[in-house]
Image 1 (cartoon, one colour):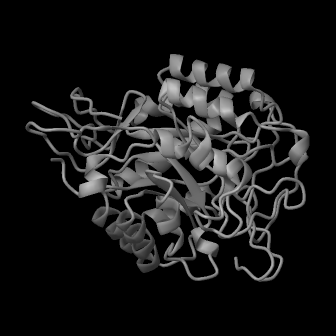
Image 2 (tube, rainbow, N blue to C red; image 1 turned 30 degrees about the vertical axis):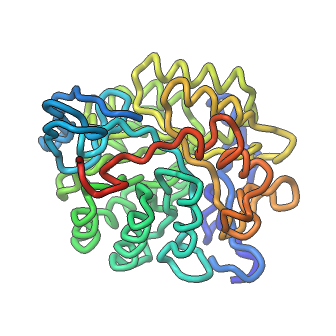
Length: 383
């Protein structure tokens, strides 16, 4: 559809406005990035681990006997990725620090299979791609997108975009994930998959409601047989890191096989704020990842620059994963005339430009210089 704005913070059927002030780190309550415009339509192994148990009783943590997933020795494989403490590990026990990008696969003009975009993203050396998806899409389409990401050695992190900013729609996302045909796809790929329950679900959601809502969502998905790590976005359109820090420990206690994702669309995107919030989260031993960021906020765009170079450097120091927003084969609608979020001009590696080129390739702490793909993704084997 011509001129459709389908941003990461904007539901394609109900575009939200910007400008509502949020409490978390000086953020803005509106979401981010995206939008089909013009003619588009919408490092190293860790041998420790003790088999943490989820609320559904499934053992999810990895363990290795002599050796790790990154090298020789006997390796005890587990079902798939797992979270131990604040770190993600693959099925071979190798620690994985996410370094990748977001792509609005569901709105690609060439179809929803992620091609040729995954091939282009893989040229950066990224180890992960966050796949924008919708509940209206088929399980077969989901299977194809995941398969294609893995074929290009990218860890697929699939998120549902339907409830962006809409807390009341969280249960409908779980309805999709727990459909028998969708569960079958997740089970097929459970060795190599992460599921992001929903993108930026909710704006103003108090701590008690957010905790109760996600505990219920996690339990429903575990009871449906889904064992993969579940990624949970903060409220306030993904920005409320204060809530992650306050309530996150309770969710981890409920199910240790989760990651907490903050979207750094803060109006205060200073290096000092980024450093403080990351250090506070690490001190709490939170399994934190940065699910989205770009060169500035979505609210008033270039008036609120984001110090992404500090994020890259500090994340490398603290081993915090991140995913940049967004690759750009689907053009972002937000800030289109004031510092577009697109990392590329045309969705290709050769088209990387500006902040996207720095984040992907040229910065000292870019994807290309810090991303490590686990052996299990590179070779399909632990050895």
